[in-house]
Image 1 (cartoon, rainbow, N blue to C red):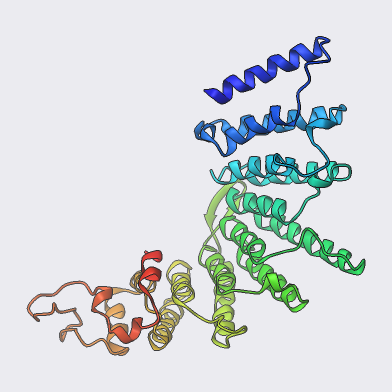
Image 2: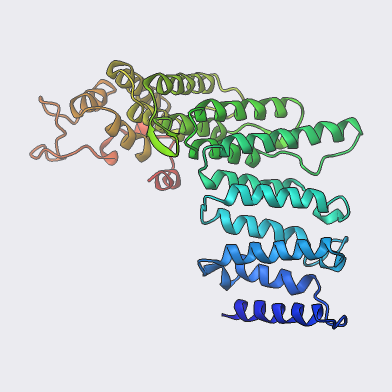
Length: 379
């Protein structure tokens, strides 16, 4: 491939240089263009592209430390070296590689050390987002913990900058917190639900401290519910096993707390939607709970959803999974669905055939706040 040929040419150039030809000396473009090809260009399709890009970047860092300072110019230009670092991290993350978190952490520390001399390599929000994306993608048991530690580091930098009267270049944003919550949800840590909740609380506090870019969103609350829904499994000694009923009940109580908070609209327009109702009902269906608690909670959430007009395909599907068939039909009837025969079966429009209930059959009043695009995105 073209990138392999370019890499071979670079290797020959370096050998020629090390053999005593001082005039043949690589510059930043010698590395950055090949790294770009492996991470953003056509070369990214190769299975080993992230590894090749990472090895090139490590070589680039090593040579800079040996005195090749032109490899990372101190001024920002068209090939700002920070993009080489973030593109390598992102190349690992987009493939959900299990090493994407540790690669991100390694390169962030390299940026921090190099940033003491190279202004354009000081870790900023953009770089931290790449690392958080890495932790959100890798699925390792410590991913949530490591992502939360990076959030704390960013918040500490903000406080320190504020004490000097400056603005931090590591300012947290909504996406930073959402990625940390995703890291918790995708990990097999027994503390995933509590961890995602803690990140939400950090977000709320940071917004209260006047960081307007950290304003909590419905998605932030939904991500806690998502972590709760997947709290049915944990990793023990490298194996994924079923979480204890006690752990799952703790996660469910956190989910109940989130729904209670949303019912009070903690911020303007931050309230339950199809996404939160559906994810809460998913908790009821997935977690190992006593049947009466799971079914009653799912039924109540669905009733609230009907009242507020947010019944979508996602909500309806989760309800079907969470309840046994007879209970499912009873809940529909209890909320005002009338197209059922005496045995609780759905009748076709002509009243002659029995068939499954579909979303289109439900009263429009239940779906009044769900637009078509939202329906499609939840499928």
